[in-house]
Amino acid sequence: MLKGKTPHADFDPYAPYVDWFKWEDAKHPLSNAPEPKSRFIPSKSEAKKVLGLVRAIRKGFIKFDKPKEEPRFYMLWGDDASSSEKTGHLSYIPAPKPNMPGHEESYNPSLEYIPTQEEINSYQLMDEEDRPKFIPKRFTSLRSIPAYENAVKDSFERCLDLYLCPRVRKKRINIDPESLKPKLPSRKDLRPYPATCYLEYRGHKGAVMSISTEASGQWIASGSSDGTVRLWEVETCRCIKVWEFGEVVQYVAWNPLPELPILAVTVGQDVFLLNSGLGNEEIQRKVKELLHVETPTAPEDSGNKVSGWSWRQDDEHEGIRLRHFKSVYSVEWHRKGDYFSTVMPAGDSKAILIHQLSKKFTQRHPFKLHGLPVSAVFHPTRSIFFVSTKKNVRVYDLLKQKLIKKLETGLREVSSISIHPAGDNIIVGSRDGKLCWFDMDLSSKPYKVLKCHPKDINNVAFHRSYPLFASCSDDCTAYVFHGTVYSDLNQNPLIVPLEILRGHASSDGRGVLDCKFHPRQPWLFTAGADSLIKLYCH
Image (tube, rainbow, N blue to C red):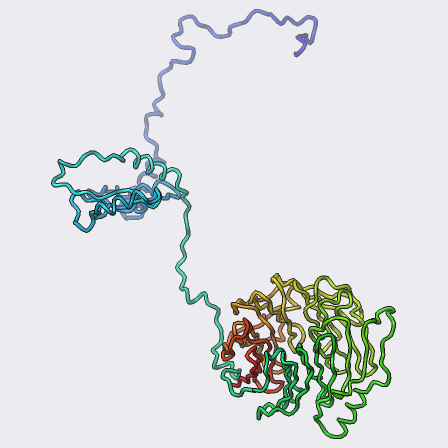
């Protein structure tokens, strides 16, 4: 067919058309016979259906809609949202209403609405945005009112408002604001916790940089910028012993074992291990054996061993003097009391050292440091080591010697960390006044970020037995929180702010420099830049 060919040679494609209908004596091409009678007889089936509908209407089964009556009156200033126009649209949003005219736009306003000539002159000095758009005038009658000069301009701006206004349907939900607050337990149910200042320890001449409580809770040691370390009896505020160093004491830390009353003190580039003189004769004999160095040790740099340090006997203070090559910022003990770590922020790759007291042995941290270290803490139950830099906290396994987790703080600069006694939760204090709570089983991001202090947080601390933790800051306050950690992994920790402890005075812009909990009682010790140590009790 496309090529115009025929299927057979005898086929004639142009054969003449044969009209099969006879047109003679016919008015129409179709039949013109009359309609049959059956088409004019009513249908019996349709009559039954009509009868059923009539009976249903009479009995009330079928009801018709009443015609809507148009109201004779309407609200002149009514809301368009309630008008009948919105019924014809699925989502009708009314146009914004123009501002209603006030008294000042009246043709005959009161005298207090009419500005003076001085006020009119001051309008000319104002910006066009701040200048009032309408200045009230007074007319005696409506006939004396001239044409409004800004009529066309106002109409044009009104039209702009109508078609440029973003119309978005906002779903408003009526919610009681009180229901949005978290349901926290009452503070009375969370007692005991430190609330009032009970004792003050006076004697230091400079700012108290660090404090540490002894394992039994009977003694407390403090280091100050006046170059002294003092040993206090907790209940009587009596100073038992004073060590003079002549240089700022940066950090003090008690040995966690009660049978080893040894005090570690950082002074400049030195770490002193001091005999506190507490305990019976057997304990003292054991301590003197530990704090005895036969020959000064300073091995060469090989592997993890570190050069630039030395273990020496210090006869002046009756202890050991551990010399470092940079200034030591902090010292932390291992739970078994034999190992302790030191942090030197300017020490580069050897910034964190781990020392063994029994063997007088020192080794550097076997992992690469990413950033300046701030503090290093041992895990309370396992062989895990926490190293915090200014931006994050890295968790290492010392036995397997590998990185377990990296905690992203999102803070400007980390200042201190503390480990929960169970070991799975960490609090981190920062220089921008924020405190982060990390749940290591949950995520590497903070579980809670508490913005409590307006100034730098200097230290954070957990209580060993009570569900309490605290933070101290340069704003001369210490905040006490309740922090319950549940054994059920599906239940998040409960954090409740309890008390704001005040009482310290500011000195050279510094406030509370350190805070430590009593190991057995719900008491909090705070050390301030005002040379005072305060004990807060329940």
